[in-house]
Length: 126
Image 1: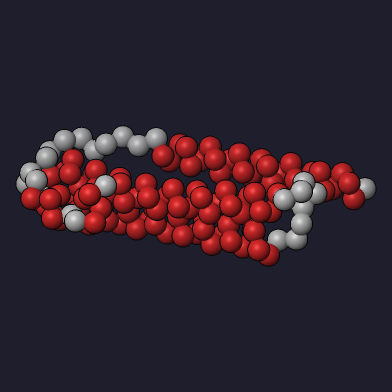
Image 2: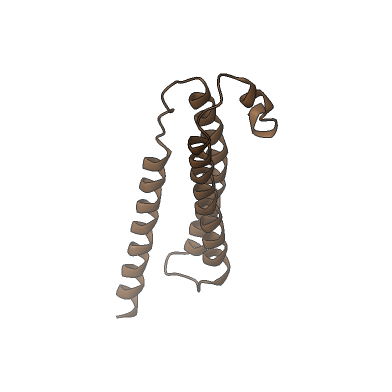
């Protein structure tokens, strides 16, 4: 975590990689940051602007879950960026990441929760 705020140590380890790899690493970092910001924004919209759903407090639960997922995405982005940069500088393989799979599963579960909400609301309105 120290390297998040003072990357000098990262730049002093190993050899400088081809700049294209470092720039690609930064682009990946920025893509994860955009994903995190989109989730935080979406969570805010869900929590504040959607009408109440059939399941009590569902909008707040989903909104908070999206915001927390966005925070996790942002934190994971910086951690993965540093770990990849260190690996490239030391000529090691890039670190594996389970985060994309975890993110996909959480998004899928959230989608299923929303789908269930739609069916509950439809069933009650009949």
